[in-house]
Image (cartoon, rainbow, N blue to C red; front, side, top):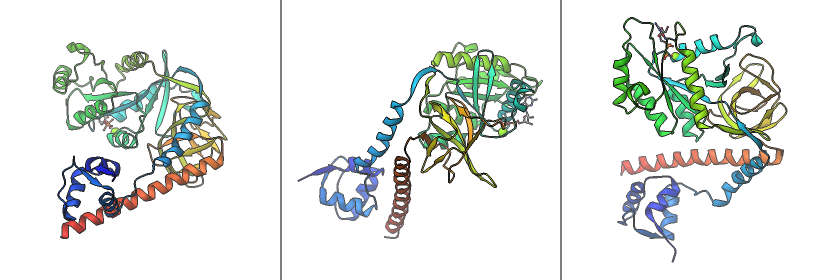
Length: 370
Ligand code: GDP
Ligand code: MG
């Protein structure tokens, strides 16, 4: 007879092995996580936990789609780095984003950056840099929890007059967990109370050892208020990007990630997306999360209409029927039938997962009452 090890079963249901052994115990069977149970008991467990394991064939829907898209992309080239600014509250994340935006976008250039679309890109002497301007760890983790790796480099802002704080440490942990390189920006250098050496010393306790201290973490001392050191900081970003040899195909069906989305009166669902591969064109059929639609219009962060966007370039798109969650992957598909199929598949899966969670909660509260 077929047997399955308890921990394997738990893994397939995405629950802890202990939850399964607990349930088995309630069912009168004392089994360890590394022991096997028979098929009948296993299906009973699955039923009890209100879970339908995803049949392998279902993931084929996604795999086929991915393959079709990959086949159509070509012409690999260097792409701009995507940067997220992180750090403790009040250490100057927003001020830095604003200062870069203000100083790096020529006043005449398409009227400057006027729209908040969740990201913007600037041109430096050495190349384009894209900033995700929804600072904060919530956005970063929301994307990561959906498996979207949108950020190439983290700028860790630490106020020179305040030093390492809880959210500084948290940011370091997030960057590490995702394998994203850090550049340290010691901010508020214009203040008389600035003590950068103390800050750098504190950072070493989290194993962030800057170049000044013999480590390899790039460091810039800046003031988001006066603009001091910002060019040097951007130069460090460019150097880091070169080191990483960031590349993407520039041609073919676009793929990327949803940065944020919202419903707007008169415009409908508006989604800010960041292209990661290929080129997104007006008129493309886009599948984003569980929704699909034709891109009716695209605008950049200056509010200008654009017809296309390549790798690492953020744009706002109109034409989706609803708002996909931040961190959802989007991709351009050639045929509407396929788009509908995958969208339905995903919507079903979302529903199932929701039901599953509800069932599990019900089950848990039931046990608690016993
Ligand atoms: P955030 O919470 O990290 O986004 O921090 P903010 O950008 O909102 O800045 C918090 C406060 O610090 C604001 O009052 C800013 O004006 C001030 N601030 C930010 N950067 C500097 C700087 O370089 N020098 C000085 N003196 N003040 C700054
Ligand atoms: Mg802020």
